[in-house]
Image 1 (cartoon, rainbow, N blue to C red):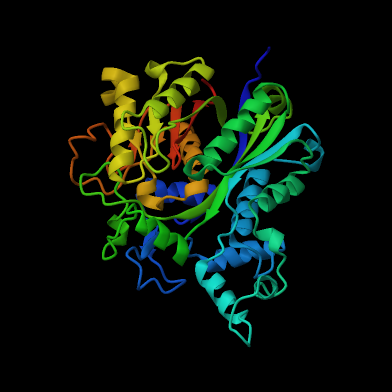
Image 2: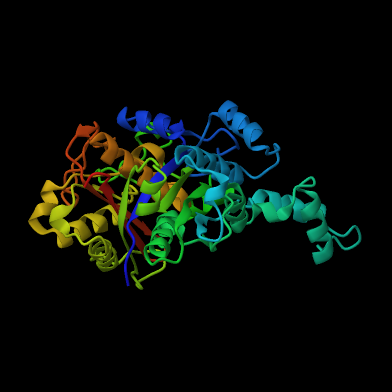
Length: 430
């Protein structure tokens, strides 16, 4: 079977440190932190009171107007379509490029229904006589609480379907939810489908809006969130000895992928080549990674094999790097095992140090950072690197960006449930 080469021809990003790809990249190279106190709800009773939240409400309102979305439309839908429109324009997309040879693969959980809202609905739907909550009364009150908003718009697949409409894509449609690897897996599966000749073009990526009381409480109870509330900009510190957990974030990123020959034929902007994808599962524990990183190693090996490359060819690793004790140590172990002595010569960095962890959207946002690193030959830093950890002793590009020769970049995404998804990007001229 002939395997097609796959080009990345467009991208869009909406993040806590910049709306739009260039604004995002400028903040990355400036080492800017998008983590701050939570203001959009009262977080005073929560252990963690900080997040990587998109705070530019004026810009978001402008995007709502441009996309024709009302004020009650789900935030995750806004994020998805804004990043999708950016990628559409970046790729020079035209309606006639659509059709049944174009697919959409998207990683999203939709909009989270907050527990506070559910409790309020329950209280309002009690029976006047015995004060019990009848199911029919609860559902009726629940629907009314959305003030006419259509409930299906909150579901994960609605963003995927909306992107298909935007791109006139009538090929395969898929919504992926594999926690922290969702959007990386979405990109990888879109890549595989093009490579195998099932489709010619794809729209892929992910969106996440997870910063809510219930989600912050849930992750706090799991003991994985940073509680450095007095210094939020320093809270996300991957691979640092004094890391105390990750910071919840949000955002979105979308890529357009095309068969390389078709992209060249229409003279599309070829940002880079997506050359490899590897996926695996630890099959270990739902909330813990395999301590020896076996699943992570396998995913990296598979991505390199798919690209026809080996560890010696990798110039840069964009780490999953969450800032938890377990993740950072295991990822470091996995890199050392696969790369051997060369692990100490390959720069590794985590942009979650600036963004927090955008969960379903993290892999796609990090893919954008890899592509920009290839474009500008510049490595994004890991900020908040202050205290060396003997167990995390690689080159994490501490605190400042670094010029470097980058021809091949590996992007790692590892998530709850033992999901592992890795992507290989090559410079357009490589």
